[in-house]
Length: 296
Image (cartoon, rainbow, N blue to C red; front, side, top):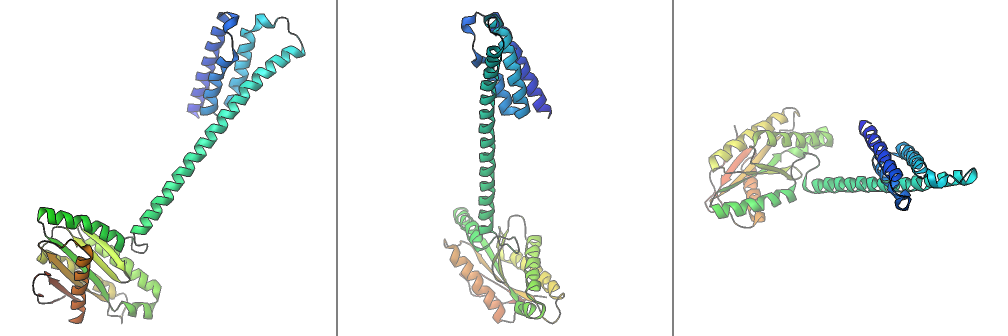
């Protein structure tokens, strides 16, 4: 509101200045077009009521400045002259207002489209239930990390996690409870992983995490904390024996193919399941399989 009042005040000052200059100059330089400037200004910045006010002010100022040439006009011709001046100014103001509204609507539509595109992009890269990156996003983040590790000769570590007996939760407590379990696992991953790590839900009850600059011992420690936390969730659903198995692969020099790394971690996780579930298996794909470690 203050801005509108300031704009109207500025426009009135402009009308006075134009009217004074119009009155002071020779008739041959007089033109109603000079009065369009304050009208256009308020039409763009101040709204309809201000456009009407300034159009009236401009019409009056123009009539005063043009008074010597209008002395011979009386009655209807004089009214017609003033009315056409006001109509011209008001018409231009309304056109400018229409252009401003169209511009604003276009900007709002463009902003809405950008928002929808951002949501769609986020939805295509984020798991809707856990709000973790999905498989597509995980691979896109994994690929530059592979390139960085190969270039700098840094190790790369990836953990693959699968819930044990998750189907029992769905069967005994319903799918809403199963969704709640998956959501809680997402919270656990964000809680126990570090800022540089990248957790993801790959689908179903399978999760993964890219562990940044981690050796095999530290990766095992992180995985153990996560498995313990998942077991705590299982206590909410008695009779399901809910837990998790984890496979961790650790490369001195990772292969270029991200799919190969994810597949190796997946195979390692299934080794953990085959050896009794609720276990962690850590391996270097170039080494022999290490002894499985049963979670405490």
